[in-house]
Length: 79
Image 1 (tube, rainbow, N blue to C red):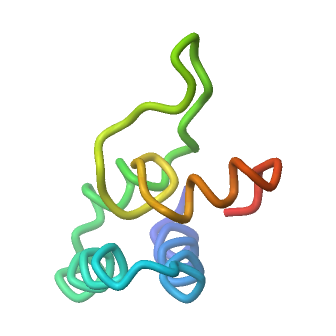
Image 2 (image 1 turned 90 degrees about the horizontal axis):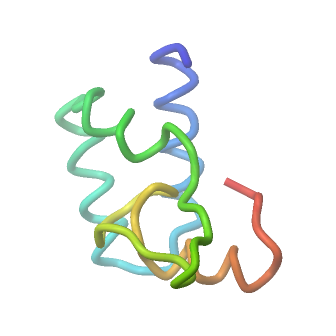
């Protein structure tokens, strides 16, 4: 994924995130241009396992947050 793609995905996620706390977290990462951290959060999506969805709390599709739960309940894959 190119840096432009990464930043575009992060900005699109930010625009749709219903949670102020994770929006603030993601906005701070974008402001710092923290591409390594953004790549870790946007390199895929959390996957269901035997215990359901589990992951580190935070913003982005590779973290556990309200957006991920909403998208999973709707049948995913929109990111």
